[in-house]
Amino acid sequence: MILAGDIGGTSVRLAYFERKQRQLVPVAEEIKHARDYPSLAAAVVDFHSKQKLAVACACFGVAGPVTGRVVKASNLPWIIDAAALEASTGIRNVHLINDLEANAYGLAELDDTDFELLTPGIPGREGNAAVISAGTGLGEAGLFWDGTRHIPFAAEGGHADFGPANDLQAELWDYLHKKYGHVSWERVLSGPGQFGIYEFLRETGKGKEESWLTEEFKNSDDHSVVVTRNGLSGKSPLCEQAVNIFAEIYGAAAGNLALKIFAVHGVYVGGGIAPKILSKLREPRFMNAFRDKGRLRPLMESIPVRVVLNDKTALLGAAHVAMMHCEPGTANTKVTKETEEVTKSSS
Image (cartoon, rainbow, N blue to C red; front, side, top):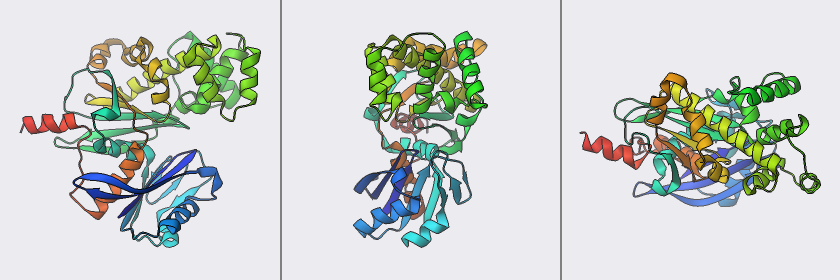
């Protein structure tokens, strides 16, 4: 039995897994609100004490830069220490990985129904892959192709400098720079970032906020949800404009990551936001921004792009890593079935 966790800026998803016939099978699962607990250890002890199952290994994917066995969560007031978790839970073998690294590992546990293909590119080409995920924050990770398998690795590109692609985005950068100082990609590509784009449009006179929309904001705990809902429906032109800009910037960021990692095998767009705005990602604006890389546009057109629909990908990835430590040599390291088939056919 292994314990896995997906630790985001909003939720803590914990689950016990067993592997049966090469499939990870959940035994018990619970989603907790992160702000209800003073630490990850408190949330894990709460979950673990209810189940009282014998656990051989545990792995937690955490939103933040993992250094050794310690990580300071990016969007939570938590410092998570693997040794402290072992002491408080009684689990002897605890591992910490970045949440996007967990997403990258989780791809190996998915099947074709867990993806929405935005563009096929050149399917099955061997090479690196990349994952980018917008949610409470913005995460990035890569998968290095060593000739036989993909090896996931973490990145912190979400905190790199945001680069505007047109005059309107330059205005957005200037607005955010005056408000916050440093403007990262996460500042615009996240739940809070979505509302930040809306505020920029409203406060710089790009549109008018309707009275009914003002009331919706007053009655909502998550303003980005209000923007997304009314933007996708077209009920609010200002919200729709904000969602369109968000999709364009998302495409540009995904394309930048593909270039930096040379992710010719494919780019995977994960996180909580992408499935909710899938209709916008299907529109030309996302892929146009992805491909708009000057002389390298032909290369960008050859890269497959998929949206990850399974919201348990990071949890499955953490379980995958825990299982690797418990049962060395048993984990699948191909990111898709397609890759596995191509590898077999070429051997």
